[in-house]
Image (cartoon, rainbow, N blue to C red; front, side, top):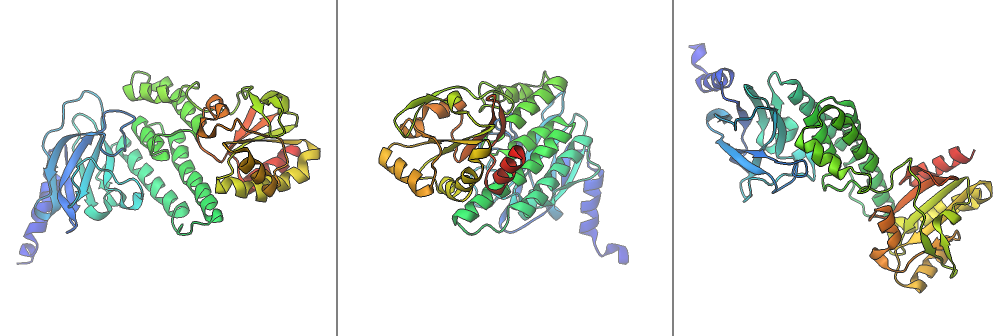
Length: 387
């Protein structure tokens, strides 16, 4: 009689173990979640991990005991990356992907090779976090490793930010950089193309690589050497073209004529008079910028301007009086410039950037040696360089 206690569970396990379907498994269902799984083909590097951009190639109901099965997948000669997705019951679009919090992400990127029989288990309410694959291929093992790296980095760096003070905003930005660095480190270390591409997109979910252009360029060079024929590598490298990216570390800062606060017009190169030069890009209306002026740059200027530090400020301003008052209030007495054209600032176009606060650390020859170093990290950098 004992063997008749759990017939439904035994049938479900046998279905999973014996399935010869390309993709099957079991999902722990939840009343708030749909009983349908969708298989999405992103179609391009840009669409990878992006809501509403992929194409649904198939769907499968979650049936008895949570079992699902995709009987046929599109015939491909090469490995193919798909996104397996589950939606909440009130979601209208099968291609909506939860990106704001990986702890509750509703999709899993996975790689299907011709002839595979992928068996997956997951919980509907914690789909990406809980997903596991039985005897995964090396590609899918790397994808699951990346998923775990992402979750651990998120838990470590990105939880607990409820405050909106200046200090909290700066701390959150620093924490995001550390979270993103974990994904970048994975992409740099892996020899698996698709997991690397997923890591790149997770590192910049909006597709904006302004803060990590050197990383993007290096990834292009890496994969161009081993997978140059892959269309997604072509798309990656199109975004990683140096003439499309912000000025890279190791290159010379472009010269540009700058209207100064005192009425002069000087070339940027003529202002690089220090052993270490800091080009600071800011605005009077930017709260983190003003905080950095007062708490970091002004003390550094007082301490190191006679020891080889030069600071050049460039403001996204339109009103000369507001700009001048902010300089005075912040004690930002280093050379200050602005074209007074607001967001249309020509220097930003020349540097190919849009986001502030931003900075470039430049040596005496005009070569960029570091970028976007802020707060205590900036103080340590200046002290180490000049000492």
